[in-house]
Amino acid sequence: MPQPLLSFGTFALATLPVVGSCGGSALTPTESDRALASGEQPTESDLPNIIVIYADDLGYGDLSCYNPDAAYETPRLDQMAAEGIRFTDAHSPSTICSPSRYGLLSGQQVHRTGRGSRAFEGPGGPSYIKPGEMTVADMLRQSGYRTGIFGKWHLGLTWFDKDGERLGGGFDNSLLIDYEKSTPLVDGPQTKGFDESFVTPNCPTTDPLYVYIENGEVPVPANQRYEREGIPNPGGKWRWDNDKGWMAPGYRFVDADLLFTGKTLEFIREHREQHRDQPFFAVLSTQIAHAPVLPAPEFRDATDAGARGDFVFELDALTGRILDALEELGIDDNTLVLFNADNGPETLHAVWMREDHAHDAAGGLRGVKRDGWEGGHRVPFIARWPGRIPSGQVSAQLTNSTDLFATLASVVGFQLPDDVAVDSYDMLPVMIGLQDEQESVRPHMLTQSFRAEFQLRQGNWKYLDHRGSGGNGYDKGKLKAYALPELAPDADGQLYDLSSDPGETTNLFFDEAAKREELRTLLARLTAKGGRSAPLGRVPLGMKNIPLLK
Image 1 (cartoon, one colour):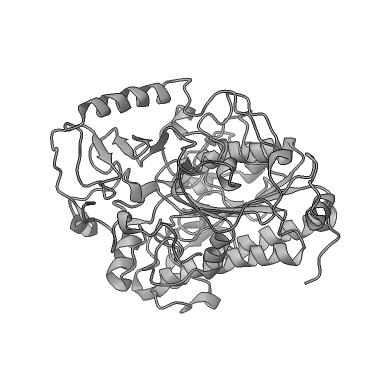
Image 2 (image 1 turned 90 degrees about the vertical axis):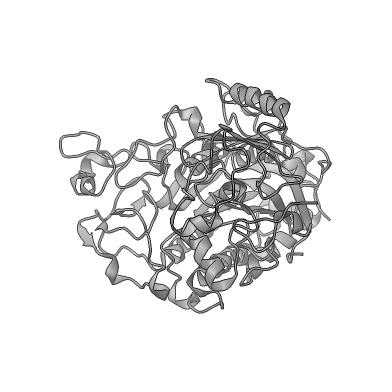
């Protein structure tokens, strides 16, 4: 029998149901739109539009289609899941934001860069994405797409002072930026495959350089002192992690995601007016549900679950606005929408939501953001494409955000070189119903925790190449209540069988020595310099091999 879960959670993972609760005038249609409407098979060149909605610090239990005991409903994302496919064993590449964003755009774990795992602050950089390194946006642009990204960038940027010297991160260095020497940014979105961009350098409402970057330029420099007392503090605590610093005049904190969603919709609408015979790729990189928790005025008290419940409900509603726009523009059937998150829920967020609202943001999993346990990196992942992805699917396939690269390459028929996206697997066969659910696409999967330590999955076996959480300390403070006894205190790693121990409570490091050594050897091979975890010679499906739904 599965063991009861003693960490974050009101229910154990093993008790999750297979299926959760998710069960206007248009512009002139493109040839692909017309083909879908008539039931004809589009040609290879009739490619779908693609939208990625990338949430921040959103836990496995934060959507009601994943958590039947959630303290609020997320009706639009539940509907999106019911109309497409919901993955129950999906993971972020890292347990913090910057390395995960690198994984999303590059298809690779951050250790492939040769740099440490960190979240950038102030004018920190340079970018994790090396000059000349192909991104998913580069690949799609080469395939004929117009590309855009809106919201949080947080991949590192190069900024210069008046003497042309590169600046490091930090509070004080924000005032030393020479914007004329720094822009157009040498490693901003425009150099990484994006035609249009409106982004913030770091966390939009957390880190001390509060400016907007539009198409590689900074229209208004950060020259005003920012004091957090000027914005709301819901419940007297949810403004936590809103750093003082320097901001551009007119910078928006409380409704950041309304701004980013508006920019995304503007890009889509303008694209349909000016480039409607060309597919688009848009990334909406949200602030929600990162700290501080600042729901926009129209969403305050929208739920009975306090400020963070309202915040996640706002994310749900904004996703609905994107979906509604696709229907309004007549491109719904031929647009692939992917919803994913960069890591698990923030520490105090998870604690406060459990204490105040009996809501388990980690969804019954052990650990939270920064931790190598499942709650730090198992996240929601939903895909919807009405013309191609059958509705009502729930998949337990093991997958990672790095897989977006190979999956989208498969959609557009792009043959990936072996030295590109070396941690990316093609999940398209799963999405379109061609993969046997009993046959795993992935034989293994890498993740990295806060200190860049590795976790390795192989089926239901999980090896953690470190002691403890790999991130947060559980010996004091609010997290102490969630510390579990260490049953193998002399072990320098951890081994769990998630099929019988989903809460990662019983370390089998010594009891299953053969499996431990097998996974250690595999980990060394997958993480070696010049190594890879994805297969060689990946062959894309292409549109001609994707069944058209009737």
